[in-house]
Amino acid sequence: MEIRRATSAAELKAAEHLFDDAVRPEWAERFLAAGGHHLFLAYEGAEPVGFVSGVETVHPDKGAEMLLYELGVDEAHRRRGVGRALVERLTALARELGCYGQWVLVDTGNDVALAAYRSAGGVTDGGCTVLTWEFT
Image 1 (cartoon, rainbow, N blue to C red):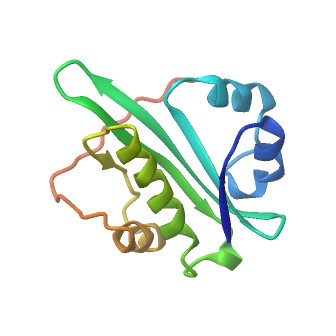
Image 2 (image 1 turned 180 degrees about the vertical axis):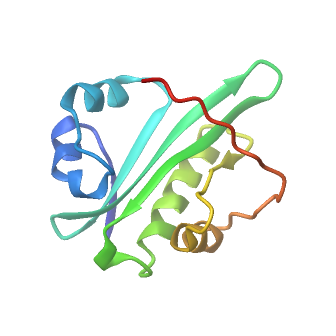
């Protein structure tokens, strides 16, 4: 397996099967051009089998931390270390960038994601409630 940073909308389009919805080229370009936005793709040969995205967040009194925005692994490649390797790559980048920490939100009952995050060193703090706003 090889992990590479995504640098083009075409790469993301080729990995579209890993995302929840269709990759829109204008959004892919915007993501890739935005400072502090990161996306790594995992490959088995020429086939993209997983991705992880992260966004650096900065606050005046805290410094920078990495939000692990999303992790996706092709179903046939799950539980084979792909997710862990992707999370570890993003974590290494966060450290290189001087982030003081990294965090991720996980849907209740998403045992596959929890296993990947825990195997990469993540721990549950037990004190989080998520509130959302949806704009349509």
